[in-house]
Image (cartoon, rainbow, N blue to C red; front, side, top):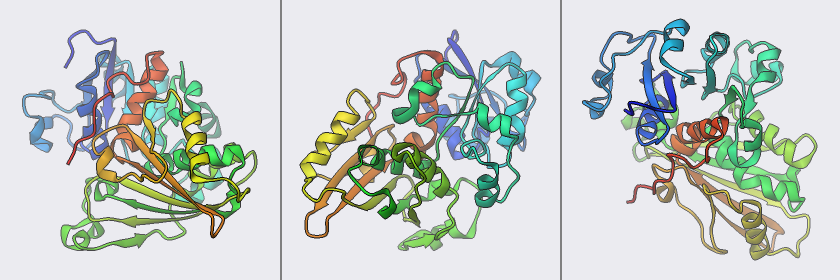
Amino acid sequence: MSQTPAVRAAIVGSTGYGGVELIRLLAAHPRAAVSSVVSSSSAGSSFAEAFPHLTEIVTDKLDDVDPDLIRDKADVVFLATPHGVSAKLAPQFLAAGLKVIDLSGDFRLKDPEAYRHWYKKDAPAQAELDRAVYGMCELFGQEAAGADFVSNPGCFPTATALGLYPAVEAGWIDPDTIVIDSKTGVSGAGRGLALGSHFSEVNENFKAYKVNQHQHTPEIEMVLARAAGRPVAVTFTTHLAPMTRGIMSTMYATLTDRGRTSADFTGLYRSFYEGRKFVRVRDTGVYPATKEVYGSNYCDIGMSVDSRTGRITIISVIDNLVKGAAGQAIQNLNLIMGWDETLGLEFTPVYP
């Protein structure tokens, strides 16, 4: 850990997959360092007990969730907590004068009724929902600049919205015809024990889950509504794949002009994402795979127009723990601090 960081970071929920990924990424950040690892369930124990691969790398004991204690040790708090927990903690850390980046879904939706419906929990206060900036960096990064409270997007919405936004905003596809088929690795379910994520349940298996009920549905619709300038409803189905990391969103929509080609869409997307380091648009006819972004902050996008049906297929891949969580959270930290948003994130994917 850096001895003289420009920013000291505390990670609440540090023993989950998102929290430990933040530790891995911040270890390479030139201007930020982890100053406190926090866990309400394991306070006082050695971090390396939970994650032996960090032996002699993270030597701190786990702190308890105490805003006053953490205020003395940190400048910014990452909340890598389950849904419902951040709703209670974020206001306390903000009141203590800390900047907050929340990786849960508690502050993404601005409609309390939508939150209650999809998350089955009471929503935070409206004033807190309004205060939280929705930090999808490539689309709304200017809103995170200088903010003190950022809600980090979900993993599925990141892959999906980055794949659809340029075409919806340009009016090149009909947003009422969007169908989204997304697959995720098992780490998306978190580190807690559950029957559905046991090896024998996942290995050599492929299954749909939360059909028409996934809590990321309204978040995707919220982002696409900004692109369309009106409400959007999508069909969104998620699948669990027998792999550790990765998300692939395969999206289908009807063209508004059947004369547009795959090359036209490639040009549109490259123009839209010009200068955005972490979105890579593939050549026409070339499609990304999850292994090609593994361990990185990249989102890779490929597309194909089917002139026979007048529809387009868009394929978008990310690492769910990096671009879908910890990497984008650090990207948001960079924007909050006025740094280059790529700082500490310019590493290549792990391959094979």
